[in-house]
Length: 515
Image (cartoon, rainbow, N blue to C red; front, side, top):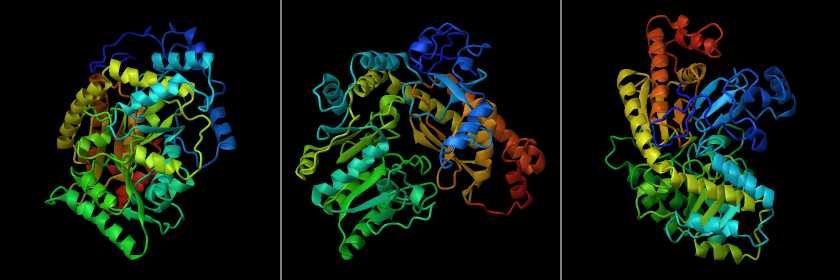
């Protein structure tokens, strides 16, 4: 794996083992910047309070059991990170292809510096006048279409989406919400209610005010790539939902969708879909909420916001954002029009968020905006994303397990299938690949309704060298896996693999469909 680099231009020039270290622990890390990475007794050890077994035991004792960890069968303990690399307690380096939160890179020194300097000076709530919040709001609004100019700051994407629903419902007095199948919009009760990704896995019954539209998935969905006009066909489904709601005496407050669906399996809506949906929703007196919590801030490369790839003639009424906004610092926002903001204010209820838009958060947000611009991270997302997609498409031609490669910029999905014609999800195989990639020091995750889509959404400083390294390791794993499936099923997984039992059962009955 290439050593840590600060070069964000896509070539990944190595700087050696004495490169500037991650400064995630602020002042403590400052005193140890020149220690060799991974050396015995280095910062990795200094960042540990407990041994890994003790950490696991304490987590089981004190952390809620529903709070899961990555690679639960064999979790890794991460003690520090820098740029697109993470390090465990032994100093082992992992290439991070998961973290769309550490947007400009883990522990970016400019972000750390901005937070530290403002924290030393002042942090308070936004009821006091302060320049940081208004400067950040001004800079943020400048990245959006002109009509989106009013900001409400929160601390998480869940808070932002909850507030967006309040704004939408207050605007016309309507209550119903249209959401997409497999969508996830946050962990608050109001958002679980509109997140099929969650409520369909539990015992919750869909509420009467929630309407679920088909995911506009042209690979595995109802209308596929061979359909003459999938955008119109999927939009008509929304139109029918609106008509049925009206016939039942219900009124639509909002349609909400991620600009690119992440938990649903890296789904890119067909061109024209959002425009048509917005037309139908507006005609019904509702508003269009674009959830950019996972996909905003230049991740698609050519545009700062993912909804902008749908064309200048599409502008949402409300945009929510979060995760990458503070590069790991808890920061989120709702941006809307003056008309919607004034309707919200007219209710007479004051909106106040103790920490939303505080001076430290705003300073961090400004640093992130500066880094995206100064390091040309949008350009990097385009260059590296195009290169990575090209490499993956070559793998698709080579490996029958790969059914589809889809994505834009540094937001890419690899849809694994057992049968390309039937597009049968290869769920067990995907989990096997994740663990094998971890063994090769590459961190990936899987999602989608069948958890068979490998998700690639790394920090934006990801390089071409990183892309090549990741794809080479994936090629090695898929080659061994496909040979084993075709020749000797039981030998393909080592005795200590967490997925061994699953695979032996599945492969002993090759006709079984576990989807």
